[in-house]
Length: 198
Image 1 (cartoon, rainbow, N blue to C red):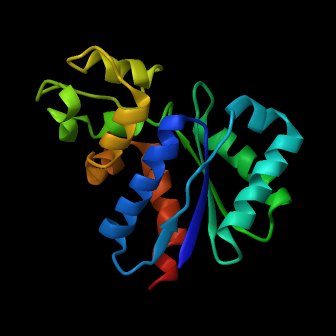
Image 2 (cartoon, rainbow, N blue to C red):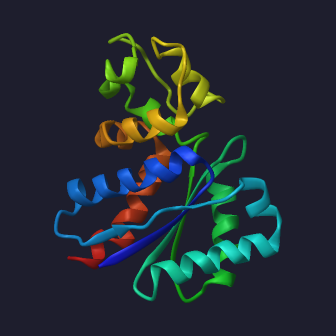
């Protein structure tokens, strides 16, 4: 059993990320025995800028996933470069928990960018509407949640209910093909889960 202790920044991700991880387990590595633990929710700025908080949350994740587990930090990149900030966070975190398997994945720019990358697969879901011939650059919109809202017939995007629903539905291959940051998540999954059960 591989226990995955994740650290996220939003209430929507607390519900959505375990759903996504279970889908990766069932669709990518059916033989894997994976337990996606309830994520640890942090405030991004506090987590990244207060060393005591950074250390405390990582040690909590390390205790939860135990010796054979994996710690997965998933944050929004916002205006930062996902690659550069991710590498910085990873380096800092390794100093705190060198005894644990660790990955840092920054969604470019927000978690919802992964839904945008697979937008055509969400057509009609929860009132989501997009033209069949729409050309989408998933990681371009600065306000990915706002982009989702604009494409909801209701004119509202409710993170707490829509995010888990979309996480259970969006096409993983489309997201992989259209989002570099989602490919990063899949790569880390391959290293820390897939290769360990082969």
